Image (cartoon, helix red, strand yellow):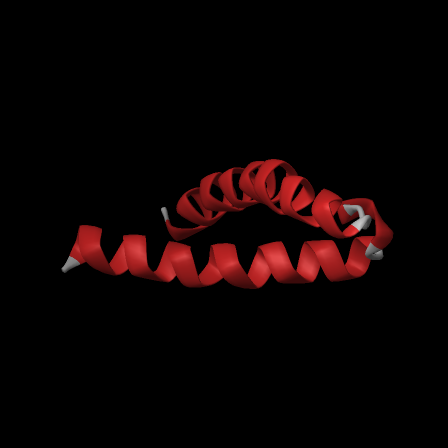
Length: 61
């Protein structure tokens, strides 16, 4: 169950980062894709892992 929550939160975090962060970075002339793939996956993975722990804790008490 935890891995399903993590996968869903990972997909949501990636979609949010692609839209929001890329939109904000355009103001400074940068692009989300200027970061390496490893950096993007690591950042999104850590954030979604924390989010998944919080959601799982709320569901199971």
